[in-house]
Image 1 (cartoon, helix red, strand yellow):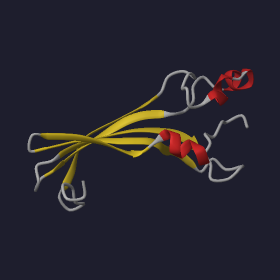
Image 2 (tube, rainbow, N blue to C red):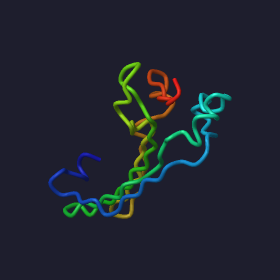
Image 3 (cartoon, rainbow, N blue to C red):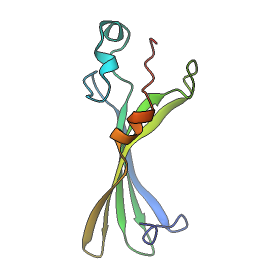
Image 4 (cartoon, rainbow, N blue to C red):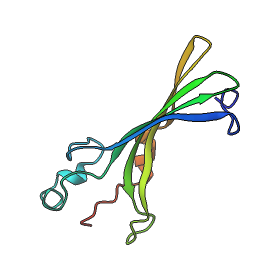
Length: 118
């Protein structure tokens, strides 16, 4: 991907980010407890995408991402949108490939979602 996209030659073509509805994300059982249901209508997570095009190579890439609320320490809500899942779909000269850049299973081994009522 580094050969196809450079900071000097790529352009963002489209962007979309929406809040996820409900508390049924399988990665976050913390939101299915009675206390969490009382305080939270949803998980404050988002799903989105960026679409890039490179003017020199003609390559196109769509980055699909998911974010979660995250705190760097126990008391401060310091990172409202930490990316916990990210994969890219790339097309160039009739070829297409995907690459998973950040895997949710790996990130969630060391990071926990910030639940507001904690």
